[in-house]
Amino acid sequence: MNTRVTASFVLSVLLAAGPAAFAGETTAGQAASPPAPVVKVSAPLPPQKPALGEDKEPAKQLFSHVELPSLGKAMAIGYYPRGCLQGGVELPVDGPNWQVMRISRNRNWGHPELVKFLERFAPLAAKATGWNGIMVGDMAQPRGGPLPYGHLSHQIGLDVDIWFMPMPDHRLSKEERDNLSASNLVAADLKHVDPKTWTPADIAFIRTAAEQPEVERVLVNAAIKKELCRVEDKKSDGWMDKVRPWYGHNDHIHVRLKCPADSPNCRKQPPVPGSDGCSAKELDYWFTDNVLHPRITEPKHPPKPLTLADLPPACKTVLDAPANPKAVER
Ligand SMILES: [Zn+2]
Image (cartoon, rainbow, N blue to C red):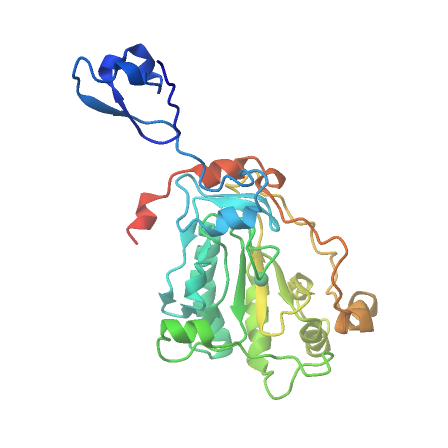
């Protein structure tokens, strides 16, 4: 009696079973005669997470589980809060003028332009501030993509957080890098900088970042922007235009680079409005009660997490691509 055996894992079959064996089937009744060598035929492995299917699973799960960058030409794909990174490169965790913080998050990856920017910016910032160097926070995951916590953007390898804190004169341990916190420069009223932590070096730090031509935006807390407007007042030569207020950012700047020339699928952010951002019209919103003290309520319809289908189609290719073997050797 013929019993069809179909299995989705490696099957042992008998050559003597006839052509059907090669299609992944065997006829149990003929198994014993004549004796024949046993061969293994590979059948497709079952999907590792069969519950949802890749297209429906939150993309942050898929991207945060990949530990190495994809093989392929470096390319920022999509938009800062909706995309991914092909051919990402790693910023070494220590440089002459920088240390990478939170190493355990494995977010010190970016488009090569971002790594080049940081290698160039670190000594410039050190010189401008008198600091030993800079403390680099989150960049992107090895293949970019949505992150399971911490940021909406940082997806295409062109965003980096840099702390408001001078680099110490010694190399921090891995534990220190995971546990130390940056300085909060904003006072408890959320309307002013904190005179206990705010220093002129912080202005030099922000200014040096905003002056770099490849920088698209520098995001800081509104109280910090307001202080810059107060002290810089019309003498900024354009760099102040790029410094914009955003939620949080009281202990770090967020530097965003322009789309690099090698990334045709990188979507540009609309340019800043061509003002220094210091008008009451632009600033006042940030100091309204709703923004300073938002009511925390559970949203009735929480936003659905991004899936692979929400990202540019090339991001599936990036996710499925083999790892860059050079990155394995690091
Ligand atoms: Zn950021």
